[in-house]
Amino acid sequence: MTTSDHKAPTILSNLTNISEQGVALYLNGKASTPDEIAACCVNDEMLYMPDYVIDDKGAVTEVRYDKVVFR
View 1 (tube, helix red, strand yellow):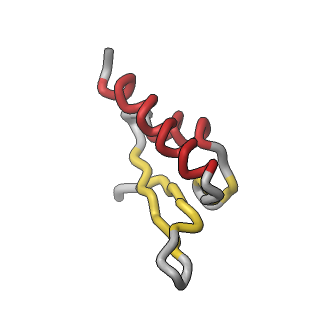
View 2 (cartoon, rainbow, N blue to C red):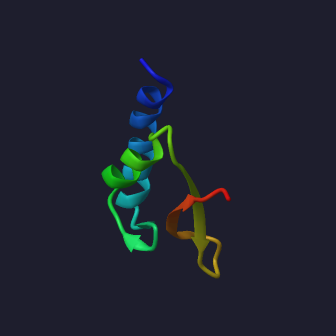
């Protein structure tokens, strides 16, 4: 099993849990699903960084995953 194979269930589970709590998920600026994001995040050839958006009470309202591009 590769490192990616081990990460996929954990990432998917975490994203599913926060999505069920009403947190909106985005991938590269577009509304997305836990499955779509998890599939991208375990790809060893690309790196995605989550950005947590919080409201004025400190609650997470969105998680935005964007591909990191190195130049």
